[in-house]
Length: 203
Image (cartoon, rainbow, N blue to C red):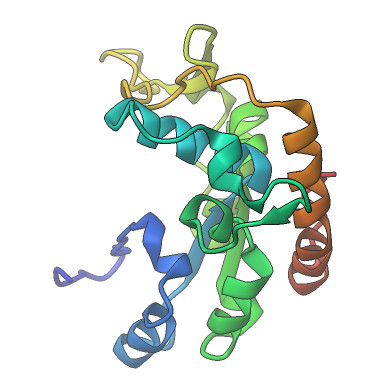
């Protein structure tokens, strides 16, 4: 980590931290005061998005349905597949709560980051003890991407939009498969809502 001066906050981001078993202990031993921000979204949408990204790099992978099930006939979900495994948020959170109190973790809604980016970033600024500087005027919605873009307040420079790898069109997934995944995730989602005290409205 670079040295942080007074009045600065050092930030580091890696999506895999939340699901890496060793990460909480390592971060805790580095600094118990670390504040953690976790962006979560509907685990079904997240799994399809994960698959879409892999498909763009490896077009010859099996279809989503065959990777989702250990046994399609019985509807048994393959929880060893990382695209499925990552969305079992309650399980990952249990590991973090062994090392960090809930008050040091902020859960950001991926859906609200799209529908109300300024509101969700307002929560982030409050959590970090920062003055609310980022507001609605810093965003505009890019219809092509389906995501908000960040613009500089002065309007002087080009807005920053998410890169080519974001906003890809998802493949059509059989609705019965989507429904089965919703049923699979429901109890984990409910547990996650209870653990965080926040209903993300994924059902």
